[in-house]
Length: 232
Length: 233
Image (cartoon, rainbow over all chains, first blue to last red; front, side):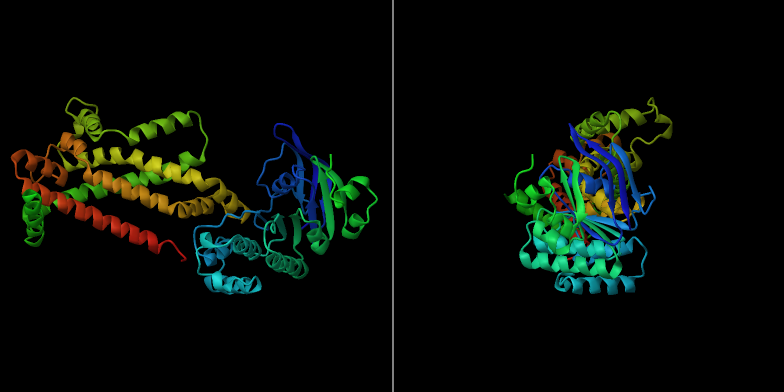
């Protein structure tokens, strides 16, 4: 699914997002990077329709209608239902009236892919942070969304779990052609999995480039950000 | 101390000999309290969630009124209902005073605000996350509402347990509107009050123990149900 935004504007006490035009190409993984308060989460939540915008438009495959059945967002601190892991993962299929047998097969398959088979009967509230991240990712992936939005899915997770999550993201991007937009603070993660990188600063777009072009960019702000300097 | 021991002995005797007077009182108590609980639940569960979820004019005032009514003295509630339904009152034509129906109305009015208040508090804790999650997973409004109901089920159960406990144990409201008429409006609490007045402490303690045993059994059942519905270890 292609996502195009025009004249997006969000104002709290001050303007936190003001971007003219952005295009997130279909089937690509785009990483959104930038310092704290640069508007990354605001942009992602506006695309996810979990935050109202104060101006502008978001087009999903050319349409202004939000395709809630075909997209989802995974937050850094996921909210899991106070129920078993199985029920959490199965929920999106249940509301889509998928037959029980098929739900069971698909839950078991995704649980195998994410190495969480042994957690299926546990209460989701009793999991560690890494386990919760994997369960919320499984819940998001199970209905095969065309657009997957991720707000720092790997923040504060151990490297082994990060590798597992990155592998699964690359796999579904390749196999299902899922468009993935993820926020990350980790440039090395963006380098590992993103096709394109968007740098935001103070609510404005600094650069949206292909991965290699981004890391070889001559743009001073991009270079300073890559070198870990504070952007002002 | 002897009075208490005698009371305990008497309680078991009354239970095992199936004392007709006591069982009549127990049955009426359960009938009145469970009916009031059912009506209050039907009103309080959706209303609590709707009030918690929606913003509307004077919401703060409504919330403060609900919290005030949560602490309403039962005798005041009974008086209010009595006045409404007395012969000269607005609903006097229904001739409900001193019937079990009016006791149900009084108990319903007493426990509904308590249940609404508890459900509002529980719902407020997680409703934003639940609705946001449901939306992002593609749920429609009804599915989102059902998910919230599921998520706050423990709070709802706690409200039901509290409502039942309050209904079965209150004496003021049912005394004022029901009048403790033998075979018609006499429930356990009003019976205990009368026995105390007559100096029959053994029977009063015995009835009290039966009341506590019933409350214990009902609460145990509800907690058991809650654990079954918890899903996952």
